[in-house]
Image 1 (cartoon, rainbow, N blue to C red):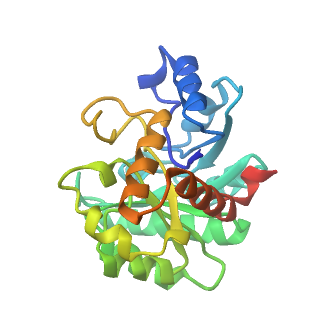
Image 2: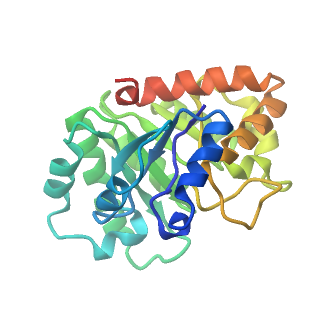
Image 3: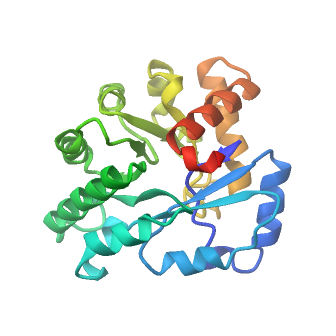
Length: 255
C-alpha cells in the first residue's frame, strides 16, 4: 500500500516520527510520497529516518506560499526537481479558499510548475481548493501529451473527475471519502478505479473515526477500506489496483 501524499516532515511529527512510520509499516505501507510546501521542505525531508518504509520526495511551492517564494521560481524549480531522488513536481495548484489576493500569481506559478514537469517528464501533484474550473482549464491549456499528474485530495463531481481523467490526471483519494457528508460516496463508484491512488495528506484531513485529529500514513488503510466498500471490492483488490496506479504515475518509486 502506498500513501502518495503525506507531509510527515512537518513539526506535527517531530515527537514520534519513528513510531508513526512503524504504525504505517504495520498497516501494510511500503512507500510514502512527500509533497513539498516550499523550498525549505527538502532539508526537512532529508532529516527523516529511512527504514522499512521507502520515503520519496517531491518539490514544489504550494499556492498559499507563492507570494513568499523566490523570484526566479521556474529556474529554481527546474534545478531542484531535476535531482534523481525527486519523484514529482509539487505540490502546486490553486487555492481560492484562504485568499483570492494572489490568484494571478498562483496561476503563473501553476503554469511554471507544469512547464517544469513536462521538461523533466515527471508527474505533477495538484492542490485544488474552490478553484476547480480554473485548475482544469490550465491543465487543459498546458496539456501537450507530456503532462501527467494527480488531482490531490479529489473532492469533485463525476463530471469534473471524468474531465480530469481525460486530461491525463489520476485522482488522489483520501480521508474525505470516509466523511459522512463528504459526498464522494455517490461520485467515486462512477469514476474509473484505474485512475485512483490512495493518500492521507498527513497531518491534515484524518479519516473517520479520527476526523479532527492528527492524520498519519497508517490511516491509508482506512481510506482503502472505505474505497473498497464504495466500489464493492475487497481491500486487497483496492490495494493492488491503487498500488499499480501509483507505480505507473510515479515510475521513479520502483527504481
